[in-house]
Image 1 (cartoon, rainbow, N blue to C red):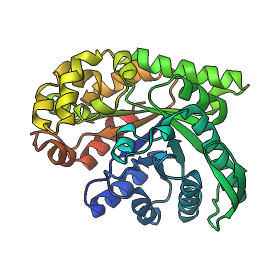
Image 2: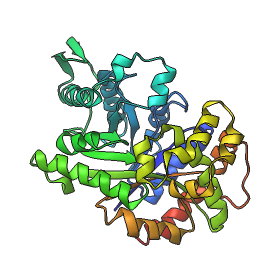
Image 3: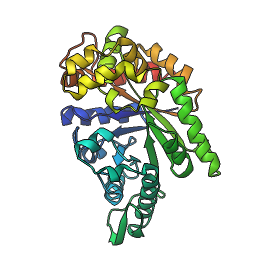
Length: 349
């Protein structure tokens, strides 16, 4: 079982760099980072963190190939791979739908997403392998393009991110080095994802067990289980509008039940949105509580579904106060939660 951290880089940079060092010292497999305008720049952070870590793998999750051309993504991760002496990773997808809307991306750019992902994967693979590309596709075209950025890893690991499925999950099994999904908590949601991934791999004659099947779970861990659950509920509520209705349903949440909260978020009324998010919804869309609560969840749902890699994102005091203007007594800091998770969950599993 691999354990990694999924970072939302908003804390002061010196604290974020300290967290990278801690993850490296504790033996986490990787630290992935959101690569979105909302947060601090992932590339700059990981470039600075490369010299302060020795084992930890680093990379975007996810790199969006609509806002950012695949060749630019390849250039960045190849440079990071050289900086880290072969510890870079890449998880790509079409990107955050809400962010694309805020950039007023034309609707035509978001159509045929599976075909776009397939073509982007070909571009990424060729450009990372050869450092140059001539290509004429439906979505991307290049003539004589080249780069001096060369990765240390060959072949370079290219993984696909997806949330809605099933076609993106199947595509990952067919062509990518793995699938990283997010916010799948229930056994139904996990089984749905894993089954589609296995179908795609089988159809391409690949052994899915050799690929990286990972899920990112948001939550909190503390000795005070109630503090952890409240923090997770608050941060989980902010993800409601980015979750496809199908994923909400697979996690046991009726989309109509959270429609008022989503409407309040979209209107900018955060406190009303939080008030309209029932505790049961927070419980369904996060993993929170004591170390034993985490162990029970992993053993009951994640492992039996076939997942071999867990990414965790903790609702820490900084995020809770920055996003919701709230303070929760008994909630450990980010680094304290990471240490507790390592000592009481990773060491057991």
